[in-house]
Image (cartoon, rainbow over all chains, first blue to last red; front, side):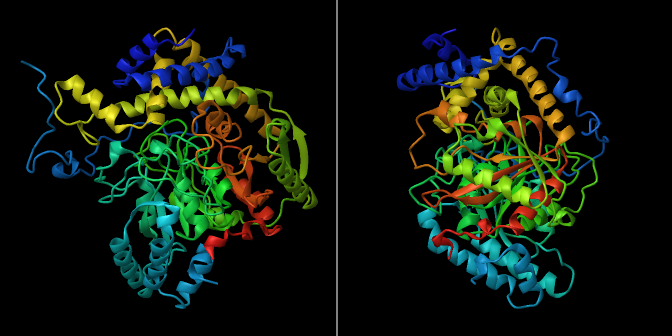
Length: 99
Length: 488
């Protein structure tokens, strides 16, 4: 399927990205070319393949168990807050979301 | 020989015999960075004060006998997507330009425990998205062999710093070739470990099922020493393997007799630059003459590895990079109208073009209506690719081929052709898709005197086999001794 300007605008909205006119045009042409390259995969017969097979092969290797619910290292609140937050702030500030 | 020309092993000996002090060595490296880096631009941050302070401390610990790690006192540098407590970690992005991590990555902690001296943080492609280090928001790193050319990427700063003697070794990260390809372009050794061998805790996520941290150094032995320090289980990374880590230096054995080596014909096809192909075929001869059994094999699924890789990597990237909304850390847009405007403008002003392109592609392949056709299809292809590589390793110990179809190209030459750039990752991405370990080692110079990298790939957790093969090649050839004139 052809990648149109409308599709780019739609995914940009989903991805929370704002593109200017020129960026939009460039993305239409770049992404069209890349997606048609991705389409090569359609030639490959993947019937009867479980999409999760790759993960299940590693079952014996990777630690799937949850770790113990124990108190661990904690961080200093001030260090974790955004550098633009006011000194002594106890929370992250965002624009008003309710009237 | 000057201090920066030595390997980790040699410097360890000099430090042990008190022929050089850690502060003296660190000062030498910092002076070198000061002299060379305005031209090469490997570093985003140089931590001069901390480095000298660390050097004094480590020297004391060595003197009183509490520290005798082979890495103690050796100056190194770290790719700027690996978190360092109190030291900016920018991912070469405007988005993280103001980010100072409140914690150290697991690998950083491990290196510090071993007495490593951190010289600074190294340039890279923005969020590790690229193969030339040209997408960095801050600077363009030059290849020490020819400053008109790219160092490769995304760990371009790491490879260039090691090649130019601006660090004794470096850490990079490899999602689709980002350690091996720059190591190849800059003529150093770069090792991408098995997925799960090295903890990703504190590595800024790009594509979590593909990312691995690994070393870049002058020799195979140096890589083994660094890998010894950083590998091993970490409960903070759910995908970290619980296997007992072997001593990788025990694999530094100069012998490949009877080793079975597969050379996929897809790796030496017409799309490979002639000098590169010749160097790889010459390496095959070297292995054969040393008693290895080399055979041409075929991995027909190779023609599907690049689209499979990019669909999975970009899908994961679009999800991982959703966290950059301006709220908790990173770039914040000024004077937002409302929450949506705040989020959208923070992201749009904070990310560069390549990152936006990859987020959009990833969002597209995950979006309703396209998910099955692209993302799910790529997962199935990943299973098939894994099956094919598993089959090869039933019969062969290692696979060898080039790292990249070309040697280092000119700055600006390929930046406007993303499809071409993606396609050149063909020999490195299958390793990440399957989770295999692989190494890039120097195997010659092309007609322009630019380094060529030989890639050796082993089975999962087969690092010891990988290191043994690479070490044997290195011990029986002189390619790794070639240095760019700038490194003198």
